[in-house]
Amino acid sequence: MKRAKQERVVLVTCATPAEARRIAREVVGGHLAACVNIILSPVESHYAWKGKFEKAREYLLVMKTTAKRLAELEKEVARLHSYDMPEFIALPITEGAAKYLSWLADSVTKTRRKHK
Image 1 (tube, rainbow, N blue to C red):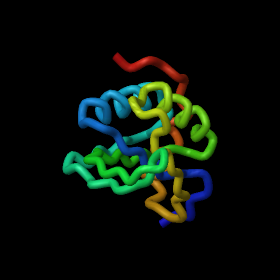
Image 2 (cartoon, helix red, strand yellow):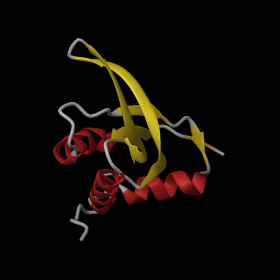
Image 3 (tube, helix red, strand yellow):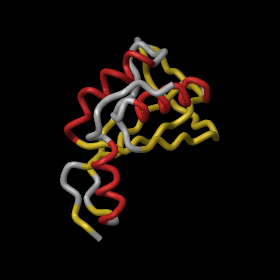
Image 4 (cartoon, rainbow, N blue to C red):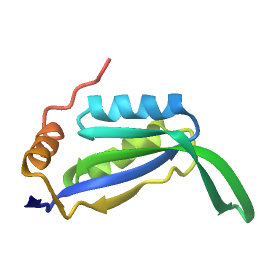
């Protein structure tokens, strides 16, 4: 087990599985996230928006990245997302398997390229 310093888990919700897959493909292909898990069972979100109580079925993305890539990842998620203000919450990873954390860091430091 290794103590992590720069690694992050980012939570993003999407309206549809297709949107979630498109975002995942683009951010992994662009080396902004090492991995994106998509929870295909919808979550039921309850929130206040523009003064009204809202309820929505959404799909959760769990992205793994580094602190250095957060700003660019957030910008890309906002560009690709259908919401005016998508959820984007970054949580620090405090510990993890050394090989996994090394792979994660290596995956997001490669030259940016577009995934087709």
